Image (tube, rainbow, N blue to C red):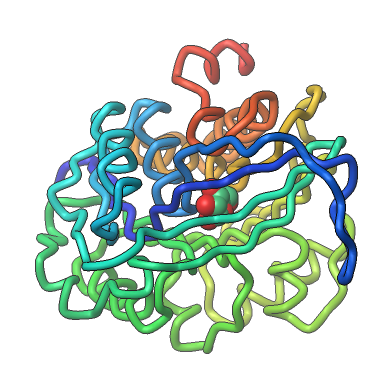
Length: 301
Ligand code: RIB
């Protein structure tokens, strides 16, 4: 088996406005001019993995609008195999993003073509060519569930980033080798409050008890914790100046898959992903901010 990584997921064009503060319900506030960036959690993970040195294929669905061509080109430009990227009549996914003065964001996604990917599309995949499958939740859950089942039947390692947050059944959790969640996602899956490393460790134990093999809870500026059958531990976040947190979580997942595919052990794979994600917050844009291998190696030395 090769060390290929397959990402199945969303591809969006991000329409970004910078604001002083994220508006509350009923507010009208003035923001910057609109900037467009290639994004989508799936595509961001694929680009992060490719830039970090992985051999990456992506399956996702674009529309037939002008954004579709630009988004496909962005994937090809970083060497991603796009043979499994499909086109469906209509709009591509579009994300409306506001970013505040601290670099924190608020995102509304219009799924467009992303919701048209189907279980039938998975039949096009030769799962035996891949060692790692990376998934998130901006495509229909039944497709994610089926992809996990198909991958596990071929002994492919599965990584699921539970973003955007959604409840998962125990039968789905059992097919996940690496479950990656942030505080909010961990809280939703466990019905417990998660706000620091201690509460994150409790939540991770609950998810391991539900059948996940290894659980990683990312905590932004507070670093991360992990719980696996063999080990548990935590890492601190890198101290950096945050410009825009968009895609930091996606970057973490893509870089993590690359490190695992290079046979790094769990702790070193997490350290690699942690460094990549920190770098992704130092620049504007989703895919535009993702670091290359040289930059990740440099911050780790
Ligand atoms: O995780 C960041 C991504 O979420 C953005 O690129 C946007 O497209 C939304 O999918």
